[in-house]
Image 1 (cartoon, rainbow, N blue to C red):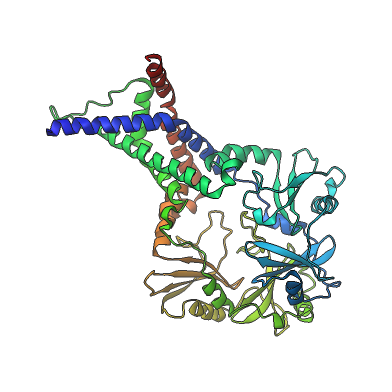
Image 2: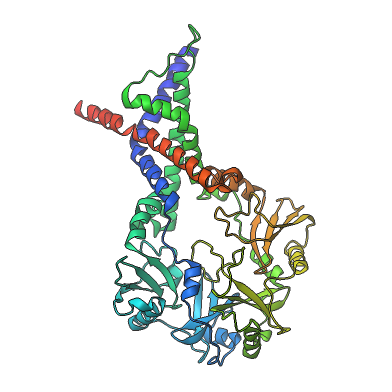
Length: 516
């Protein structure tokens, strides 16, 4: 076969691949770009942790009679995390069990089995007291709905309509008694047009995790082939001709002319979004996650929780040491180097410039609110954070077989620990190690925990995913106005690129089927 024949065959394959993938996936790309624009301004509904904390009642341990260990024995769990709060006017322990929580009343030691509808309404009334008279129980959710797809471990959920002008609904966990979701009519509409559409987060698909992953991954990979074939053909068509050395320009007219030029300008960005979207699903598990291993977390903590020091008397004394002006709403037991402490959260006082991590596992944006740490051993006063030397020693315990090649306290974000809204924890300790995976650890002195573990491949994934998909480059995320301008221009260009194929594609399909 001659070179000319091979060239013609390659051109035909390129055209047919791009044409039919474009006809099949054009609407999907339009949906992705439209929903992407919406997501710049509106995300999935979530319970704001600062708002959640402000609505909680002040912690009162007066009626408590059992210790965390006695509560754990009663609930038949071996918890790695312990939280204390209030539920319907009574103190409770919340004990981590897998991905969920078990709630035990601290005054009787009896586990919470389930809430009844009236109790759920009472919790809703304490959440929004001005709407107590209009609140209605709208049903019991036994399978995750559109807004609680990641809350399976908190089922069943009581759905409460508050009866306000915003059509607010809250979901109350029947097993923990916590508010796990709050939506309004507006947030539901915008999320449907944004995140739900963008992530194909429709309940029948997303409730089956493996199916959803395969569908979204397949669509993203097809998008990669579609955009690459389009880029190749677009450059081929615009390249200088051999006879006179000049470009003949685009051979297309009408909408396809717009499509051709839009592809030359925005095609590479579109490919980057398709590729990074596929990588976000971690195909073939090609990179490690950013969470620390269980062994690393336990090494920093100095072993498992020391329940011998978690007596009710010590908890009361540490609680009192936090100060009468602080009025904590929630306590969490944290341990550093084998020494247990209480980490307290309160909406009182001036917010810190850094953000304490919320004790709730609700997935929502981090907000700054005050926190204090009180020792369960010394029982004398409180601190805003752990001593830096203790954090550095914890970093050594986390990687005992490897040497730290760099230790640096960061008072400003770097390229891997950052927050576009400036609400992420600061200062933090960054430590680099000489292990084969080139591990970096970030530790937070305000909580005594590892914030994230980054290895060579996970740092690469940060750029391939966050960089390409969200344009999280330092030049942009530190300048919100510039970031919004750039991403809206690129999304609008991608929308132009994909929408200009719809009518020509429809006409081609109609001609093909009418000819039969």
